[in-house]
Image 1 (cartoon, rainbow, N blue to C red):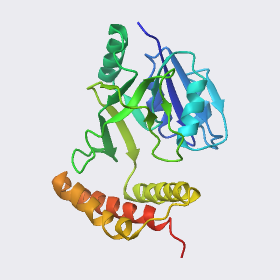
Image 2: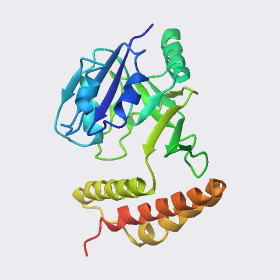
Image 3: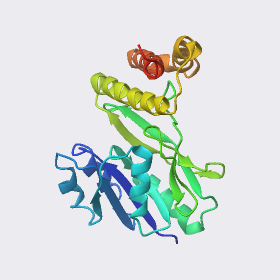
Image 4: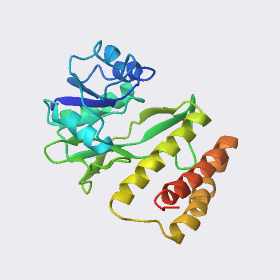
Length: 245
């Protein structure tokens, strides 16, 4: 059976990290790369693994690759500090590694929670995401936000979902949209790219209708409307921030 390392990057995650690390005790190795947290994150991590390192923040993709470079195993499972690997998911991963991996990269469905509520509609589930990979063949694209594993043309699928406890509530969600849109705009601006009129005036309403109507966000009630409108606003905001006023 192939052994596995789990990587987690952190920055001030004391409210989430213990729940995450408790769900990873089945792994052969846990490696944490912290960006000099000012809370109890590092202290908590050291209760679960000796491999806790610190590096200054260099963007999501770069940070995750740095963390993977500290692992001793070929197979790596990358988990965010606000995610949990359920016992069923852990068992499915171990079974795949025991049988002999048929792909260098594996996707998972992900259950996203808003507060304590699992959001099923509006594009929030199954939210397929690539997280298990052979580090000798796959690495993260080093973008500052929305990092992806690459190449992804030969990926398998593990059916048991990861659990994602990302947002505490409405204010937390809006704060993150503002932060992520800024990172997106900064990355685009560095390459000299500026959003055109179609990005600003067509993509936001299309995003709303796609999430609220076609992906059935309306079935989530008020929350579905809020999330669809927020996604449209985020789409507008990230493009608007690429333009100079």
